[in-house]
Length: 135
Image (cartoon, rainbow, N blue to C red; front, side, top):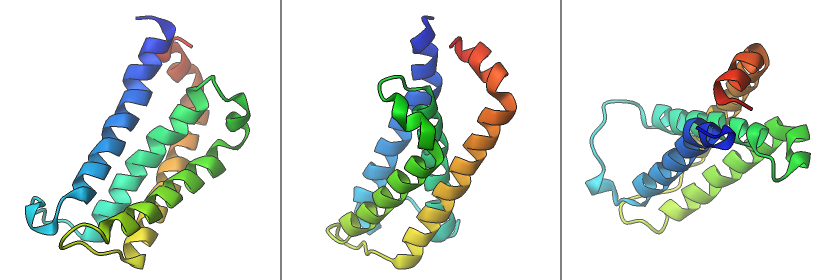
């Protein structure tokens, strides 16, 4: 694999797939959603935890906007929090769905935690990640 293809496959692609999955699932009317025996707030937390984790790493490994690398944590949290807010508002337009402040708080908490974990993983395993991704 070329240098950038590993970054794409292991960082960018999971972010794209996950983000599209969030959008699709939150666009479905409530009666068409699969039944999951997990708390709604935990689902929000987990969805935005994963989103922020990969978004954080994407911002670290992207090369188009080097200035983003100076504030990756802040940018990640802002982008994920704003997307969470827009997603909650979007759900007002979906039959059987609603926007809830507590859902957005769970989104924000997941985004904060996922981004902090990405920061830890990157700092702790930077050399191993770079070797694996061949950057």
